[in-house]
Image (cartoon, rainbow, N blue to C red):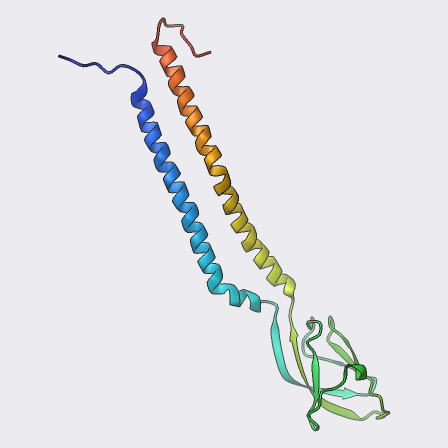
Length: 185
């Protein structure tokens, strides 16, 4: 007895197998990309936090009454400047000087009149631009969000492909039934 293949299912089986394998590969790629990206971020997070954050200790600063003195660095972080008297080892009170973070200028205004006498201090502070750190972290975060969004749309793409295959089968069956002018629409 000879058997003849009938119907249009043979072509659809290959398409369905390809679809299942494609979904599996896409899912694995999303999982591995997220896992590797998260692991990499954990490894470099300390380095990222160091961007725009540099610590200076014991920078020698000579302060003269009412004369602006410039630190070696600008963009000093707010609230990080501490001035220690090198001879007495005491902390200079905030009321005895004015400081501009952006320019790194200190103007010494002691409570007593010292004339033009210069006093040596050690300056401890942090400097840098936090904006660079925020930009890099924002780029990494948006990359993770994009990967998550692709993962959210994956089921919709799979459903669209399944609908396309089912419609292809229906149109194919319509063409094989009846006359030569049979169509699905």
